[in-house]
Amino acid sequence: MGRSLVFPEGDDPRIREAALKIQETALAEPVLITGRPLKSIRTLSPGEDPLSQGMELLAAGDCDGLVAGAENTTAKVLKAALGQQEIRSGSKVSSFFLIETGKKELGSDGAFLFADCAVIPDPEPGEVAMIASDTAESARRILGWEPRVGLLSFSTMGSSRHMRAEKMREAARVLDSMEPDFVFGGELQLDAAIVPEVAARKDPGGVLKGRANILIFPDLDAANIGYKLAERIGGATAVGPVLQGLSKPVNDLSRGCSVNDIINVAAFTVLQVRS
Image 1 (cartoon, rainbow, N blue to C red):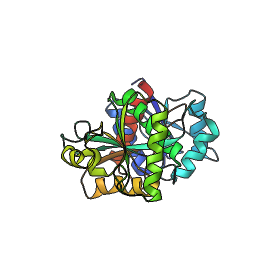
Image 2 (image 1 turned 90 degrees about the vertical axis):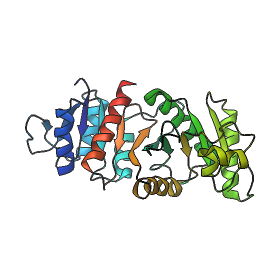
Image 3 (image 1 turned 180 degrees about the vertical axis):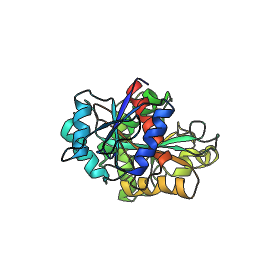
Image 4 (image 1 turned 30 degrees about the vertical axis):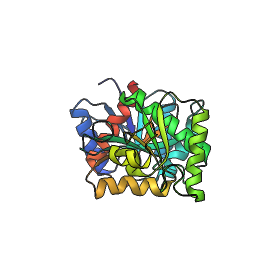
């Protein structure tokens, strides 16, 4: 298997079922923090705070990645991670979801990254630019994509003068000043970012031309609602939230996650370890 992933919430029945499948498929070597043995799965007796215990194992190099959040909030997972890890130079801790729509004509063969869906509630323009840069780097390094980034708003290229739209225009200016090595556009309405025919009407001079594969939302409200709409109504598969900006892979789960969700996040964590 080669790669080991620690699961601090080893008493959760979904985690235990997922761990068995992860081991059976040789995806990784799961390590559960639990007082209850589970077949051939490696288990560790829990301390006072299994979440912090798992982070300590990761920091010490005793495992390659960590997956948690089935029982703990994102805030608790992040607090534990930041207590044991450094933030990568030039980065900011944020998150993204891999959204697989099945519509091959959109994004990257039907897939998108949505950011930031879990960490920063109301990012300033400079933070939006950093989220965009970090997500583009993650897409290239982990997935092998050529990033095409859309900065989303209810306005397209000045069609509204509201301060909320101005925030994303300023984010685009900051990102441009960073001289990124990927194409981006903004501010853009969603359809102008991902539908070529709409882009041709609303943003005829833009470089994205309706081909964005990374969507950067203006705040956590929009991003969290957006990914859940894509998943629950649109029928997309949502993998994440995947955390970025930390020195070692730590990934969060929704407390409403399924066994398959856990396996998908574990698989993405393995990709992070290998990249």
